Length: 619
Image 1: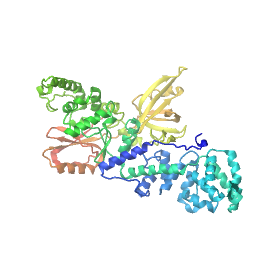
Image 2 (image 1 turned 30 degrees about the vertical axis):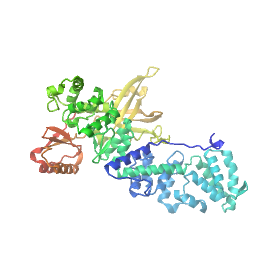
Image 3 (image 1 turned 60 degrees about the horizontal axis):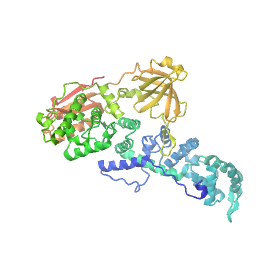
Image 4 (image 1 turned 180 degrees about the vertical axis):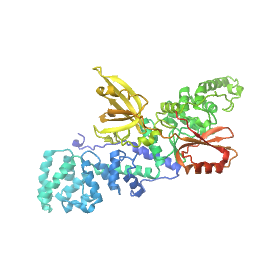
């Protein structure tokens, strides 16, 4: 109605990708000292096109779905024009032209044009009509249309006004005098009726789903910018993406898994290292404290301000005392403990959980006493730090319990995953929770996913498994299957449940095969078969290596050299350093493969008796 009354209609899209880019540029400025100006560069970087052509487009705007990744691997784009065309073609309708487009790009000598006048218009898209603007150019070049009438043709075609299009055919072929202006038509311009009619038929069939090139170009510019950031600053870029999705557990899990697959170290939350958001630390990603449940951003920012003003926290008790004015409650403190934020202080999480309530109570009493001019409980008992504070003598939680608690407070496993021991096995599956599920793109269109009724086979852990009853009283089952990439809903129809219910058990690892069904809230796998993992052997659990040093007496270059040695042996094994000054153990956050060579080099640096290796207990 607005357009019919001569008013200008404008659509404004709020694109999350713009925030991804802004956050990434801010992080790069801090970590690399570089300021990137996307408006002062040529959009022809070979490294960017290689990343896109390799299909490594996780988190790249418009190019992230599995189908688009395959298209880009086939296309091997070599220009921004290719990306513009790719975004335009990968939609219902024009997708039928993808094969022709890819073939013509690779075989330009095989391209045939209906008429020489078509070549200047279609050459940029390898002889394939891709854009609405090309329809306008065609009627101008072949039929002699004015720009205004050409746009009217584009509009009636896109709105499928069949009667109007057929009337316009006569004008396109034979011309007309329009408001004193002569439209000569194809015949007078040297184009035969037969060729003119064929081209017009092609335009009619195409224009109903044609894409606006200016729109696609704007999207392609953002696709290029995000691909550029990913190609040259992948850690900073993915960190920015994580921060822009910090309340979406599935997306955080998805991108953290991606980082780990690319051998980027993801450091656990730390009260002395983490900020509210995810951050980049020596090429690694440090988990932000705001991603933890029950931990408000305001409180975390207050903790960071206190840390930056008065130095790192030295122990758990001191932390509680120094942040007493921030209204840190027991629930928040419990979440930080279970997330591992205090692991660097050298005590077990089980010990912190045993004392945190009493520590908060005593700090609160201390504050009240000081207001009355009385002595502090801590001062009277000379309990200034963890060296004098009495912790109960108890063992740490089993590894599986630690992981379960991490997921409870953070929504994801932070220092491991029950399925990590089966990573190699899971990689054998073609499908996973991320690539079978469609998501709504920022333009409101559905992206990715698989067609309805596609048969898929997935491996993972049943994190939910419930028996339900229909209104007719028949049994059925619903649940969620989790893998390293996310979760997917599963459903077992009633007539199949009776023979599968013994395998449909919560917290078991299974292989599920079924058909994909789409719903508004996502995809569901209707299970045809479910098999527990009976003969799947877990991969060997990681070892732990610890180096014993005096932080006060060791030269700074010793730690630098040790890190250089560790980085030369990348892997899954965990690294720690015990400071003989305070007997605290600090995780180094560098994953290694413990070999005789690494041990020999480390002993040569820190001394034969200062290197110890242990097996992690399987739990």
